[in-house]
Image (cartoon, rainbow over all chains, first blue to last red; front, side):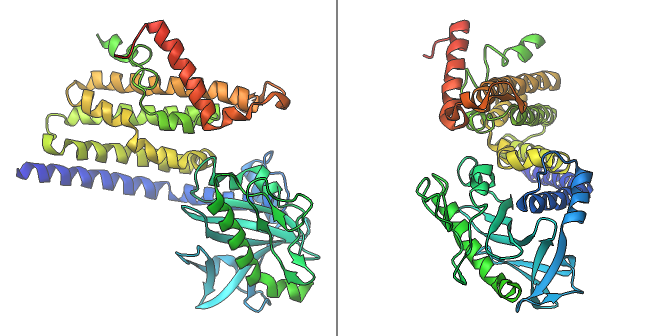
Length: 234
Length: 196
Protein backbone atom coordinates (compact mmCIF):
# COMPACT_ATOMS: atom_id res chain seq x y z
CA UNK A 1 0.00 0.00 0.00
CA UNK A 2 2.71 2.43 1.05
CA UNK A 3 4.87 1.27 -1.81
CA UNK A 4 2.42 2.72 -4.32
CA UNK A 5 2.84 6.28 -3.04
CA UNK A 6 6.60 6.04 -2.81
CA UNK A 7 6.71 4.80 -6.38
CA UNK A 8 4.57 7.53 -7.91
CA UNK A 9 6.27 10.27 -5.89
CA UNK A 10 9.72 9.13 -6.96
CA UNK A 11 8.64 8.88 -10.58
CA UNK A 12 7.07 12.33 -10.53
CA UNK A 13 10.17 13.78 -8.90
CA UNK A 14 12.52 12.21 -11.46
CA UNK A 15 10.34 13.28 -14.40
CA UNK A 16 9.88 16.86 -13.24
CA UNK A 17 13.58 17.33 -12.45
CA UNK A 18 14.45 16.03 -15.89
CA UNK A 19 11.97 18.36 -17.59
CA UNK A 20 13.05 21.37 -15.57
CA UNK A 21 16.71 20.84 -16.43
CA UNK A 22 15.94 20.22 -20.07
CA UNK A 23 13.69 23.23 -20.41
CA UNK A 24 16.22 25.48 -18.68
CA UNK A 25 19.02 24.19 -20.90
CA UNK A 26 17.15 25.01 -24.10
CA UNK A 27 15.72 28.29 -22.87
CA UNK A 28 18.19 30.65 -24.52
CA UNK A 29 17.81 28.91 -27.85
CA UNK A 30 14.02 28.99 -27.67
CA UNK A 31 14.03 32.69 -26.75
CA UNK A 32 16.34 33.41 -29.66
CA UNK A 33 13.92 31.60 -31.99
CA UNK A 34 11.00 33.58 -30.65
CA UNK A 35 12.79 36.90 -31.16
CA UNK A 36 13.86 35.87 -34.63
CA UNK A 37 10.32 34.88 -35.44
CA UNK A 38 9.04 38.31 -34.36
CA UNK A 39 11.62 39.98 -36.55
CA UNK A 40 10.59 37.79 -39.46
CA UNK A 41 6.98 38.77 -38.93
CA UNK A 42 7.76 42.48 -38.76
CA UNK A 43 9.78 42.29 -41.98
CA UNK A 44 7.13 40.23 -43.71
CA UNK A 45 4.47 42.68 -42.58
CA UNK A 46 6.08 45.61 -44.42
CA UNK A 47 6.42 43.51 -47.56
CA UNK A 48 9.98 42.21 -47.42
CA UNK A 49 10.28 38.69 -48.85
CA UNK A 50 11.81 36.70 -46.00
CA UNK A 51 11.56 33.18 -47.44
CA UNK A 52 14.86 33.42 -49.22
CA UNK A 53 16.74 34.90 -46.25
CA UNK A 54 18.92 33.01 -43.78
CA UNK A 55 18.74 33.77 -40.06
CA UNK A 56 21.76 36.06 -40.21
CA UNK A 57 20.32 37.91 -43.20
CA UNK A 58 17.04 38.39 -41.35
CA UNK A 59 18.81 39.95 -38.38
CA UNK A 60 20.77 42.20 -40.75
CA UNK A 61 17.73 43.15 -42.77
CA UNK A 62 15.90 43.99 -39.56
CA UNK A 63 18.63 46.30 -38.32
CA UNK A 64 18.87 48.01 -41.71
CA UNK A 65 15.14 48.40 -42.36
CA UNK A 66 13.42 48.64 -39.02
CA UNK A 67 13.73 51.20 -36.26
CA UNK A 68 12.10 50.91 -32.84
CA UNK A 69 10.13 53.86 -31.51
CA UNK A 70 8.28 54.28 -28.23
CA UNK A 71 5.31 56.62 -27.90
CA UNK A 72 3.53 57.91 -24.85
CA UNK A 73 -0.26 57.68 -24.83
CA UNK A 74 -0.62 61.17 -26.27
CA UNK A 75 1.42 60.11 -29.28
CA UNK A 76 4.76 61.84 -28.53
CA UNK A 77 7.93 59.95 -29.36
CA UNK A 78 9.88 59.19 -26.19
CA UNK A 79 13.54 58.73 -26.95
CA UNK A 80 15.10 57.14 -23.91
CA UNK A 81 12.71 54.22 -23.35
CA UNK A 82 13.59 51.24 -25.50
CA UNK A 83 11.19 48.35 -26.07
CA UNK A 84 13.08 45.96 -23.84
CA UNK A 85 12.40 48.21 -20.84
CA UNK A 86 8.65 47.89 -21.33
CA UNK A 87 6.70 45.38 -19.27
CA UNK A 88 3.83 43.69 -21.05
CA UNK A 89 0.54 43.10 -19.30
CA UNK A 90 -2.12 41.06 -21.06
CA UNK A 91 -5.81 41.41 -20.46
CA UNK A 92 -7.17 37.89 -20.04
CA UNK A 93 -10.62 38.70 -21.36
CA UNK A 94 -9.96 40.92 -24.38
CA UNK A 95 -6.42 39.71 -25.10
CA UNK A 96 -5.27 43.32 -25.27
CA UNK A 97 -1.57 43.89 -24.52
CA UNK A 98 -0.53 47.00 -22.66
CA UNK A 99 3.05 48.11 -22.18
CA UNK A 100 4.30 49.79 -19.03
CA UNK A 101 7.50 51.36 -17.79
CA UNK A 102 7.49 52.45 -14.15
CA UNK A 103 3.68 52.13 -14.14
CA UNK A 104 3.23 54.57 -17.02
CA UNK A 105 1.68 53.22 -20.19
CA UNK A 106 3.60 53.51 -23.45
CA UNK A 107 2.94 52.42 -27.00
CA UNK A 108 5.74 50.57 -28.78
CA UNK A 109 5.94 50.73 -32.56
CA UNK A 110 8.39 50.32 -35.41
CA UNK A 111 9.22 52.54 -38.34
CA UNK A 112 10.63 51.41 -41.63
CA UNK A 113 11.78 54.45 -43.58
CA UNK A 114 12.96 52.25 -46.46
CA UNK A 115 9.59 50.60 -46.86
CA UNK A 116 7.67 53.74 -45.85
CA UNK A 117 5.75 51.93 -43.13
CA UNK A 118 4.72 52.23 -39.51
CA UNK A 119 4.32 48.89 -37.73
CA UNK A 120 2.26 48.42 -34.58
CA UNK A 121 1.90 45.30 -32.45
CA UNK A 122 -1.64 43.93 -32.34
CA UNK A 123 -3.22 41.36 -30.05
CA UNK A 124 -6.64 40.12 -29.06
CA UNK A 125 -8.81 37.08 -28.48
CA UNK A 126 -9.65 34.64 -31.22
CA UNK A 127 -11.69 31.53 -30.48
CA UNK A 128 -9.35 29.48 -28.27
CA UNK A 129 -6.41 31.74 -27.81
CA UNK A 130 -4.96 35.22 -27.87
CA UNK A 131 -3.67 36.21 -31.28
CA UNK A 132 -0.44 38.20 -31.44
CA UNK A 133 0.75 39.93 -34.55
CA UNK A 134 1.87 43.05 -36.34
CA UNK A 135 0.06 45.50 -38.54
CA UNK A 136 1.81 47.86 -40.95
CA UNK A 137 0.41 51.05 -42.45
CA UNK A 138 1.66 53.68 -44.83
CA UNK A 139 3.97 56.20 -43.18
CA UNK A 140 2.77 59.18 -45.21
CA UNK A 141 -1.02 58.95 -45.13
CA UNK A 142 -1.41 56.64 -42.08
CA UNK A 143 -4.33 55.00 -43.81
CA UNK A 144 -3.22 52.55 -46.49
CA UNK A 145 -2.57 49.06 -45.13
CA UNK A 146 0.86 47.62 -45.89
CA UNK A 147 0.43 44.24 -44.28
CA UNK A 148 -0.64 42.09 -41.35
CA UNK A 149 0.97 39.05 -39.75
CA UNK A 150 0.33 36.82 -36.76
CA UNK A 151 3.24 35.18 -35.01
CA UNK A 152 1.50 33.47 -32.13
CA UNK A 153 -1.91 31.86 -31.70
CA UNK A 154 -3.50 28.52 -30.91
CA UNK A 155 -6.46 28.53 -33.28
CA UNK A 156 -7.71 25.39 -35.03
CA UNK A 157 -5.43 24.32 -37.89
CA UNK A 158 -7.26 24.64 -41.19
CA UNK A 159 -9.89 26.97 -39.70
CA UNK A 160 -8.87 29.84 -37.39
CA UNK A 161 -5.20 29.17 -38.09
CA UNK A 162 -5.83 30.36 -41.65
CA UNK A 163 -5.13 33.87 -40.31
CA UNK A 164 -1.45 33.10 -40.85
CA UNK A 165 -2.00 32.03 -44.46
CA UNK A 166 -1.07 34.24 -47.37
CA UNK A 167 -4.53 34.48 -48.91
CA UNK A 168 -5.88 36.01 -45.73
CA UNK A 169 -2.93 38.28 -44.98
CA UNK A 170 -2.57 39.56 -48.52
CA UNK A 171 -6.25 40.49 -48.71
CA UNK A 172 -5.51 43.38 -46.31
CA UNK A 173 -2.78 44.93 -48.44
CA UNK A 174 -3.90 48.15 -50.14
CA UNK A 175 -7.03 48.54 -48.03
CA UNK A 176 -7.71 51.86 -46.28
CA UNK A 177 -8.33 52.65 -42.60
CA UNK A 178 -9.56 56.23 -42.80
CA UNK A 179 -12.65 57.61 -44.45
CA UNK A 180 -12.63 61.42 -44.30
CA UNK A 181 -10.55 61.64 -41.13
CA UNK A 182 -12.61 59.05 -39.34
CA UNK A 183 -11.00 55.74 -38.39
CA UNK A 184 -13.19 53.17 -40.09
CA UNK A 185 -10.76 50.29 -39.73
CA UNK A 186 -11.36 47.09 -41.64
CA UNK A 187 -14.46 44.98 -41.55
CA UNK A 188 -14.08 41.23 -41.85
CA UNK A 189 -17.16 39.86 -43.56
CA UNK A 190 -18.43 36.31 -43.81
CA UNK A 191 -16.31 34.11 -46.03
CA UNK A 192 -16.66 35.08 -49.68
CA UNK A 193 -19.05 37.95 -48.93
CA UNK A 194 -16.57 40.84 -49.11
CA UNK A 195 -16.92 43.27 -51.94
CA UNK A 196 -13.45 43.17 -53.49
CA UNK A 197 -13.59 46.79 -54.62
CA UNK A 198 -14.59 48.03 -51.16
CA UNK A 199 -11.47 49.47 -49.56
CA UNK A 200 -12.73 48.86 -46.04
CA UNK A 201 -13.56 45.16 -46.00
CA UNK A 202 -11.92 41.77 -46.51
CA UNK A 203 -13.18 38.19 -46.62
CA UNK A 204 -13.40 36.26 -43.38
CA UNK A 205 -12.44 32.62 -42.92
CA UNK A 206 -15.12 30.02 -43.52
CA UNK A 207 -15.71 27.92 -40.42
CA UNK A 208 -13.89 30.44 -38.25
CA UNK A 209 -16.35 33.27 -37.70
CA UNK A 210 -15.21 33.94 -34.14
CA UNK A 211 -11.54 34.15 -35.08
CA UNK A 212 -12.38 36.47 -37.98
CA UNK A 213 -14.51 38.65 -35.74
CA UNK A 214 -11.67 38.66 -33.19
CA UNK A 215 -9.27 40.02 -35.78
CA UNK A 216 -11.70 42.77 -36.72
CA UNK A 217 -12.18 43.81 -33.09
CA UNK A 218 -8.54 43.72 -32.07
CA UNK A 219 -7.52 45.69 -35.13
CA UNK A 220 -9.90 48.54 -34.44
CA UNK A 221 -9.09 48.62 -30.73
CA UNK A 222 -5.33 48.72 -31.22
CA UNK A 223 -5.54 51.24 -34.06
CA UNK A 224 -7.60 53.57 -31.87
CA UNK A 225 -4.78 53.61 -29.31
CA UNK A 226 -2.25 54.74 -31.92
CA UNK A 227 -4.61 57.18 -33.56
CA UNK A 228 -3.22 60.15 -31.62
CA UNK A 229 0.14 59.53 -33.23
CA UNK A 230 -1.35 59.19 -36.73
CA UNK A 231 -3.18 62.51 -36.31
CA UNK A 232 -0.06 64.32 -35.14
CA UNK A 233 2.00 63.22 -38.11
CA UNK A 234 -0.50 63.32 -40.91
CA UNK B 1 10.11 -14.16 -33.02
CA UNK B 2 11.91 -10.84 -32.62
CA UNK B 3 11.65 -10.09 -36.29
CA UNK B 4 7.94 -10.72 -36.17
CA UNK B 5 7.45 -8.25 -33.29
CA UNK B 6 9.05 -5.55 -35.39
CA UNK B 7 7.53 -6.39 -38.79
CA UNK B 8 4.02 -7.27 -37.74
CA UNK B 9 2.88 -3.70 -36.98
CA UNK B 10 4.48 -2.44 -40.18
CA UNK B 11 2.14 -4.31 -42.52
CA UNK B 12 -0.12 -7.07 -41.24
CA UNK B 13 -1.11 -5.40 -38.02
CA UNK B 14 -0.55 -1.76 -38.90
CA UNK B 15 -1.93 0.47 -36.15
CA UNK B 16 -3.48 2.92 -38.63
CA UNK B 17 -4.73 0.80 -41.50
CA UNK B 18 -5.57 -2.36 -39.58
CA UNK B 19 -6.44 -1.22 -36.09
CA UNK B 20 -7.59 2.23 -37.22
CA UNK B 21 -5.85 4.02 -34.34
CA UNK B 22 -4.23 7.44 -34.36
CA UNK B 23 -6.52 8.64 -37.16
CA UNK B 24 -6.90 12.14 -35.74
CA UNK B 25 -3.26 13.06 -36.22
CA UNK B 26 -3.07 11.02 -39.42
CA UNK B 27 -5.62 13.43 -40.88
CA UNK B 28 -4.20 16.56 -39.34
CA UNK B 29 -0.49 16.48 -40.07
CA UNK B 30 -0.45 14.87 -43.49
CA UNK B 31 -0.80 17.95 -45.65
CA UNK B 32 2.94 18.13 -46.24
CA UNK B 33 5.63 15.45 -46.23
CA UNK B 34 7.95 17.41 -43.97
CA UNK B 35 5.34 17.63 -41.20
CA UNK B 36 4.48 13.95 -41.59
CA UNK B 37 8.12 12.93 -41.25
CA UNK B 38 8.70 15.07 -38.17
CA UNK B 39 5.53 13.66 -36.64
CA UNK B 40 6.69 10.11 -37.49
CA UNK B 41 10.05 10.66 -35.82
CA UNK B 42 8.42 12.26 -32.78
CA UNK B 43 5.86 9.51 -32.34
CA UNK B 44 8.34 6.72 -33.00
CA UNK B 45 10.65 8.20 -30.37
CA UNK B 46 7.83 8.50 -27.84
CA UNK B 47 6.32 5.06 -28.36
CA UNK B 48 9.72 3.33 -28.42
CA UNK B 49 11.06 5.09 -25.34
CA UNK B 50 7.84 4.77 -23.39
CA UNK B 51 7.77 1.05 -24.20
CA UNK B 52 11.37 0.67 -23.03
CA UNK B 53 10.85 2.63 -19.81
CA UNK B 54 7.55 0.97 -18.94
CA UNK B 55 9.06 -2.42 -19.67
CA UNK B 56 12.05 -1.70 -17.41
CA UNK B 57 9.72 -0.65 -14.61
CA UNK B 58 7.07 -3.28 -15.28
CA UNK B 59 7.93 -5.43 -12.22
CA UNK B 60 7.77 -2.44 -9.87
CA UNK B 61 4.71 -0.63 -11.22
CA UNK B 62 1.81 -1.23 -8.82
CA UNK B 63 -0.97 -2.44 -11.09
CA UNK B 64 -3.62 -0.20 -9.52
CA UNK B 65 -1.81 2.96 -10.66
CA UNK B 66 -0.24 1.66 -13.86
CA UNK B 67 -2.19 3.98 -16.17
CA UNK B 68 -1.07 7.06 -14.22
CA UNK B 69 2.53 5.84 -14.33
CA UNK B 70 2.31 5.26 -18.09
CA UNK B 71 0.81 8.70 -18.62
CA UNK B 72 3.52 10.37 -16.55
CA UNK B 73 6.25 8.68 -18.56
CA UNK B 74 4.57 9.42 -21.90
CA UNK B 75 3.85 13.06 -21.16
CA UNK B 76 7.42 13.59 -19.95
CA UNK B 77 8.72 12.23 -23.25
CA UNK B 78 6.27 14.32 -25.26
CA UNK B 79 7.28 17.49 -23.43
CA UNK B 80 10.94 16.69 -24.13
CA UNK B 81 10.17 16.43 -27.84
CA UNK B 82 8.09 19.59 -27.79
CA UNK B 83 10.90 21.59 -26.16
CA UNK B 84 13.50 20.17 -28.54
CA UNK B 85 11.46 21.16 -31.57
CA UNK B 86 10.93 24.64 -30.16
CA UNK B 87 14.68 25.05 -29.78
CA UNK B 88 15.88 23.46 -33.00
CA UNK B 89 12.99 23.44 -35.50
CA UNK B 90 10.90 26.44 -34.51
CA UNK B 91 8.90 26.73 -37.74
CA UNK B 92 7.96 23.06 -37.76
CA UNK B 93 7.12 23.26 -34.08
CA UNK B 94 4.77 26.18 -34.74
CA UNK B 95 2.94 24.19 -37.40
CA UNK B 96 2.78 20.98 -35.39
CA UNK B 97 2.72 22.35 -31.87
CA UNK B 98 -0.77 21.32 -30.80
CA UNK B 99 -0.41 17.89 -32.42
CA UNK B 100 2.93 17.20 -30.76
CA UNK B 101 1.32 17.86 -27.40
CA UNK B 102 -1.52 15.57 -28.42
CA UNK B 103 0.84 12.60 -28.88
CA UNK B 104 0.07 12.09 -25.19
CA UNK B 105 -3.47 11.16 -26.15
CA UNK B 106 -2.52 9.07 -29.18
CA UNK B 107 -4.01 5.69 -28.39
CA UNK B 108 -1.16 3.86 -30.10
CA UNK B 109 1.32 5.01 -27.45
CA UNK B 110 -0.71 4.06 -24.40
CA UNK B 111 -2.05 1.00 -26.14
CA UNK B 112 1.43 -0.40 -26.68
CA UNK B 113 2.62 0.56 -23.21
CA UNK B 114 -0.30 -1.18 -21.52
CA UNK B 115 -0.83 -4.09 -23.88
CA UNK B 116 2.77 -4.96 -24.68
CA UNK B 117 5.43 -3.31 -22.52
CA UNK B 118 3.73 -4.23 -19.24
CA UNK B 119 4.16 -7.94 -20.06
CA UNK B 120 7.29 -8.18 -22.17
CA UNK B 121 11.06 -7.90 -21.97
CA UNK B 122 12.83 -4.63 -22.64
CA UNK B 123 14.29 -5.73 -25.96
CA UNK B 124 10.98 -6.99 -27.32
CA UNK B 125 9.22 -3.85 -26.10
CA UNK B 126 11.79 -1.75 -27.87
CA UNK B 127 11.15 -3.58 -31.16
CA UNK B 128 7.41 -3.44 -30.68
CA UNK B 129 7.57 0.34 -30.09
CA UNK B 130 9.82 0.90 -33.06
CA UNK B 131 7.60 -1.24 -35.29
CA UNK B 132 4.41 0.49 -34.22
CA UNK B 133 5.91 3.95 -34.50
CA UNK B 134 7.20 3.27 -37.99
CA UNK B 135 4.00 1.45 -38.94
CA UNK B 136 2.02 4.54 -37.96
CA UNK B 137 4.59 6.78 -39.65
CA UNK B 138 4.64 4.84 -42.90
CA UNK B 139 0.91 5.45 -43.27
CA UNK B 140 1.34 9.14 -42.42
CA UNK B 141 4.08 9.53 -45.00
CA UNK B 142 2.12 7.63 -47.64
CA UNK B 143 -0.95 9.81 -47.11
CA UNK B 144 1.17 12.98 -47.01
CA UNK B 145 2.89 11.97 -50.24
CA UNK B 146 -0.40 11.89 -52.14
CA UNK B 147 -1.87 14.93 -50.42
CA UNK B 148 1.13 17.17 -51.04
CA UNK B 149 1.54 15.91 -54.59
CA UNK B 150 -2.11 16.29 -55.58
CA UNK B 151 -2.96 19.23 -53.34
CA UNK B 152 0.04 21.50 -53.74
CA UNK B 153 1.70 19.82 -56.73
CA UNK B 154 4.93 19.63 -54.77
CA UNK B 155 7.03 17.11 -52.85
CA UNK B 156 9.13 18.52 -49.98
CA UNK B 157 8.11 21.94 -51.37
CA UNK B 158 9.76 21.04 -54.67
CA UNK B 159 7.40 21.65 -57.59
CA UNK B 160 6.39 18.54 -59.54
CA UNK B 161 3.00 19.41 -61.04
CA UNK B 162 1.94 22.81 -62.40
CA UNK B 163 -0.26 24.73 -59.87
CA UNK B 164 -3.24 24.78 -62.24
CA UNK B 165 -3.81 21.05 -61.69
CA UNK B 166 -3.83 21.30 -57.89
CA UNK B 167 -6.76 19.73 -56.12
CA UNK B 168 -7.84 21.81 -53.13
CA UNK B 169 -9.90 18.96 -51.69
CA UNK B 170 -6.71 17.06 -50.94
CA UNK B 171 -5.64 19.76 -48.50
CA UNK B 172 -8.80 19.40 -46.43
CA UNK B 173 -9.74 16.57 -44.09
CA UNK B 174 -11.97 14.77 -46.67
CA UNK B 175 -8.95 14.37 -48.94
CA UNK B 176 -7.11 12.58 -46.16
CA UNK B 177 -10.14 10.38 -45.46
CA UNK B 178 -10.40 9.36 -49.10
CA UNK B 179 -6.70 8.53 -49.42
CA UNK B 180 -6.61 6.71 -46.10
CA UNK B 181 -9.70 4.73 -47.14
CA UNK B 182 -8.07 3.72 -50.41
CA UNK B 183 -4.89 2.67 -48.60
CA UNK B 184 -6.87 0.58 -46.10
CA UNK B 185 -8.73 -1.04 -49.00
CA UNK B 186 -5.51 -1.92 -50.83
CA UNK B 187 -3.89 -3.15 -47.64
CA UNK B 188 -6.84 -5.30 -46.63
CA UNK B 189 -7.20 -6.94 -50.01
CA UNK B 190 -3.46 -7.64 -49.88
CA UNK B 191 -3.56 -9.21 -46.41
CA UNK B 192 -7.08 -10.60 -47.08
CA UNK B 193 -8.20 -9.40 -43.65
CA UNK B 194 -11.91 -9.13 -43.03
CA UNK B 195 -13.53 -7.29 -40.11
CA UNK B 196 -15.63 -9.68 -38.06
